[in-house]
Length: 122
Image 1 (cartoon, rainbow, N blue to C red):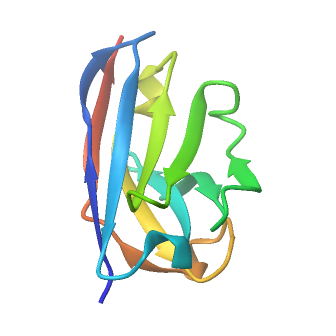
Image 2: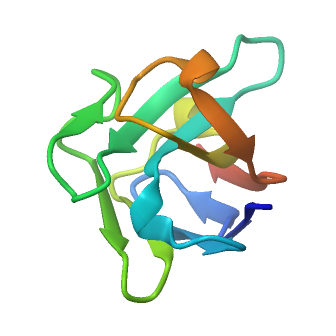
């Protein structure tokens, strides 16, 4: 069994920064492509960023390009999302997920964390 646990969410003012982390347990993180997804109140869940098993390639949603950076440390079984220049529209519950192959589609991810709340005030 694979378990994913997010941490690092919180309340921040617009223009600020947060770093989210995802810890993978049960299996080696190197076995999985990983991704971050978010869901804001009243909106559909959307992909934020994804990263392949080896760290390249990566994918970013247009809304976060240039502001967010996804990374992974397979030796530590962790993945991170550095979020800079945060905007109120970034407010959402952020989930990390693991799948067998690099993908930007939710359906390709088999394991999901419980989520962490990110709130950006204006």
